[in-house]
Length: 144
Image 1 (cartoon, one colour):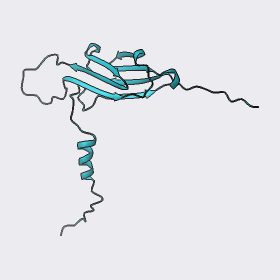
Image 2 (cartoon, rainbow, N blue to C red; image 1 turned 60 degrees about the vertical axis):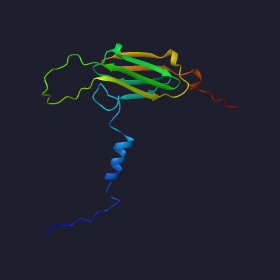
Image 3 (tube, one colour; image 1 turned 45 degrees about the vertical axis):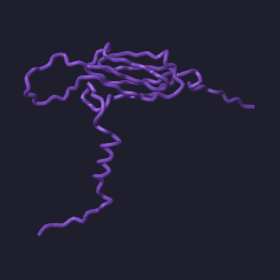
Image 4 (cartoon, one colour; image 1 turned 90 degrees about the horizontal axis):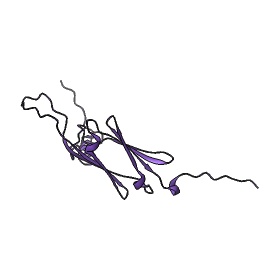
């Protein structure tokens, strides 16, 4: 005799996963040179700057274009396959080549014209200084 398991419509999350994977976090879009669906970006704030780091393995600095328009940072570029293999029997081909692009909204009040970009070991680091009015100021409290 087989065991029957009662189906719980509120316990089954497969429909949630379907919508989550299809619409909220789609796995399609631009072709990333890093073999992922998204260009990995870290963005954090220091006392004086907003720092953005993007991982671009296998990309040369001259293949990357960084623009800031208003409060939108755009990182785009193109990676080209160095030597094409003419053999047709690939076991696996996961490295992607072609153009890539990623746009990120930056916090307001930054000095985009003073931004500094550095590229080292496949990591692009952007430092965008904050405007003076956004920097934290210490106010001394006086006693009477």
